[in-house]
Length: 488
Image (tube, rainbow, N blue to C red; front, side):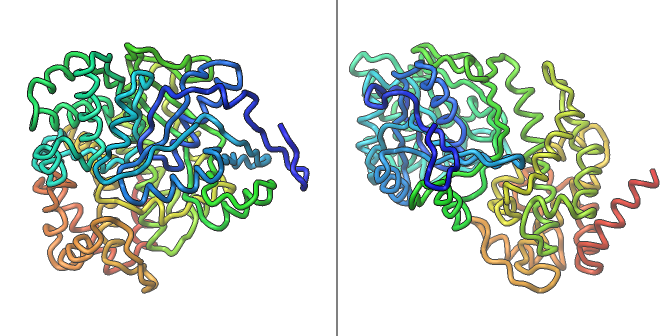
């Protein structure tokens, strides 16, 4: 630990970074990875362990080159600031030791992954980056990017194309395959990744696809830590710790969790030494987290956005938003969550509320609202589908969808313009405007709702809520929903 000029404590790596050698390529070097897996590895290295599991950062998008420049400019050290209400803590994480050149054909990335010392390739490429068909819940080989990689496998443009190309090189050279480990918030993220890699390989090389299916492992995992976006506040915070002009510091909550399947034929870091849970029941943990936490975020996002609330902790302090979350969670989301080993789900939800309410995080409602077209089908629609199947209440979840639709219209209740906040914003705005007169336009999004958009109960409930939001406003609709629950 060192002290800066203002006497704020900053923890530095206690190991000799020159002795760290690469064992992992991580693709998608955003805030979450640097506050999660990189921190677990840094903890191990501080114990003198896992020094042969250094991370090489990587990306497949042109924008990733900016992160590469930033990280190389500070010797690949990441600033991580834990925002505990009892006092902030800063550390420099040194588990990443390089960043692979970002190229359109992914040649440098493929070459790095083909090296025998790389035994794990891990991913955080967002929930929407896996080419999943909403109707089938499986890999969509008809996606244009996938079709392009299938026709030109030697110069792939996608992360999965690069993985397939590297596995092809390793197979031809007689090198054992690496493990592919998704760290994204997806139900069955290992299975989803496996479908994408094998499905893409099958388009150009069915024999390679069979070899991957027989030899490559894709462990499922549940990951959890709230990491707000980086902006001027976070950069100023890093400077206050005496860490200079770091352009990409990461702030995060103190809490973190990681549950993994132990499927690593070529070895792995001893993550259990630093709090990672290895379990064959990952699906239970991930369903709990995705539905209660991520679903909870989606539940408070749009009412907060429509009410011009800037921060998540302010939304939680608003009795209408907080009360809405409580009723939806307790009546419609939590009943669909199966038992989890050694976990009290009621206590877990209480912890989630505390985490959302942490004022130090300063997480924004706008961040929670972002990319609803990819998040809603992962975080809300599964609970909705289960509620319909058991003939349970869907009023709250239908209202969540209606609030999202109303948000995508592009103005808050006060008339403030909402700047584009989704990769599909033009389409969503057009549909939201059409849905004001005919709600079925919104629910016809098969990539979001699949067959549920035609369910009569859902359509009727959604239509009623959307009409009331336009007629009465968000605050009154939330109050009447909460009051109705209190009378039951």
